[in-house]
Length: 360
Figure 1 (tube, rainbow, N blue to C red):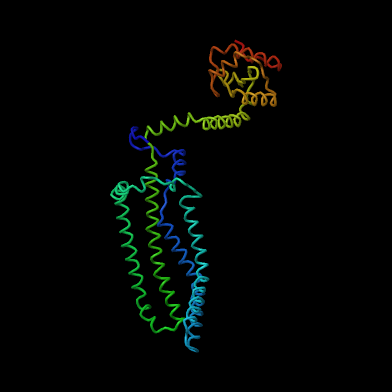
Figure 2 (figure 1 turned 90 degrees about the vertical axis):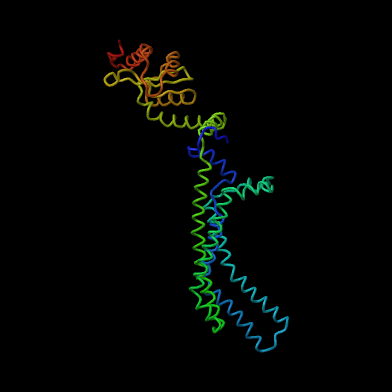
């Protein structure tokens, strides 16, 4: 959109956010997904790693034990490898399930239940060498490269420190039995992976916060964009119909409490209804407590009848008050006489004393 309206200083409207979301323009970090998958795998290792190690070591011991009884042929080696591979696959199933659940949850956290095909549509700009070079050499591309190198350095440092902490365990593995070796390898793998996983998650979380901030900045609107959207919204028949429906619902909800306060309802005779209240002791002039046309007018008349409020047909008065007076405002001076007449008529019909202020 045009930026002729000045700087982007207005928060994005719901309409613009919805359009951006439909196009897939949301805050999202692929590294956060990867880090979550890694932590899910580490969690699975911690929860069921002992059983996995025992399961695998049992298969290896069985294969090695059988080789001591007879020379191993090529067919035997193939069979043993198949058995070990099957055990590896079975041991990995729980880990894969936890990783799948973790991947789904982190994607829902970042983008909700979003299915956007806009990013999947082929675009010539995506395969153009010039466009690719511009993206790489742009400020955002340079920042992405710098941040990527920073992440590699941080993760490399974390991995080095973690391996250094387990250096003694690695050296002692040569003298361990098969079950002890499996357990030691598992402990070392778990410790190093946990350090790396936590480091990746923290970095990915920082990247997600930055992506969220950048997306919010990109969605900010200029004065001109706000004006253009208001014009588009007002011209949209669906939006206009929705606004009328909401206004009608609000009016209907307020009528139930305001119409019973009225002294009389002036009608025209079925199109308009104006509820009028007057208390000479507290009001300098009559006020309109409710008004409406069409369905709202029908609702006003129905509430008036239910509450014993007279409905008087005064076509010209109803039209004038509907055009000139908002709800809660006083009747204009030029309509005093007409309002006084219907109030006097109502008071006389009900056998009440006509207030001195309206009789004038």
